Image (tube, rainbow, N blue to C red):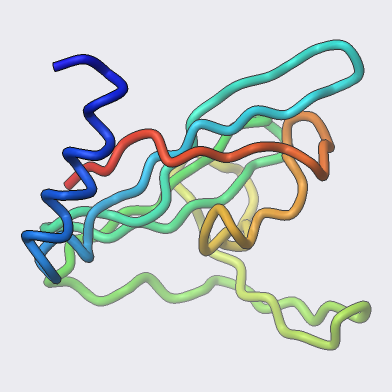
Length: 132
């Protein structure tokens, strides 16, 4: 099947399957600019049928990191809370396996306002794959 037909087929399968795919992971292709340089990468939000997942960005390694757990297990608890003086909100921090320090969760691609790799506020994110 040609690649350009794959996404409409996945969307149709999602509509026909109903809530069973509500737990599917969404993998986005993100493109941001850093001056004359264009950077493209993938980032995943959500888990699958058997597991759930949180996403964060580790500024030390400049990589997205993931915290997964079985859906039958309890959701991981935050290891710290930080009060943000600019927003007046408490930010929960979680320990991600591939990060040295606790990090805040990025709940969705829509919540990401700046490309963490380039600083581009006008980055583009395109749903690339729906996986379970």
